[in-house]
Length: 139
Image 1 (cartoon, rainbow, N blue to C red):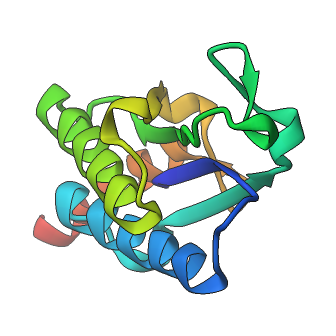
Image 2: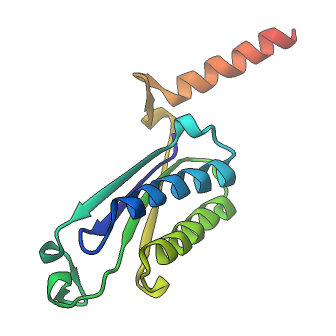
């Protein structure tokens, strides 16, 4: 279920950089959360520079390129995991996009399993079924 959305200025960014952000973010999530890669979703939202303001100045008029990201994890992930993800996403963006790390911001959302849908079923029900199946297999 790990999902991240990167909000980036559509200014001086190449397809290769976008691909690199997606690949590296997937790897970060997989390593930190020990998550199967096929469950990870990465979205890149490009925003017109004339629609982004940093410090009251439009990016199109010389405002800083200051990426923002939002990532989602299931409730129960440790503070250390969430901190590691935020730190690694920040470092990755700074290097890949050649922006100042101090200008990058991010937010983590935790979601209750009963509020998350996987293939139309709530994660809480899927977990319950997995636990019951394991119990039956070991009995």
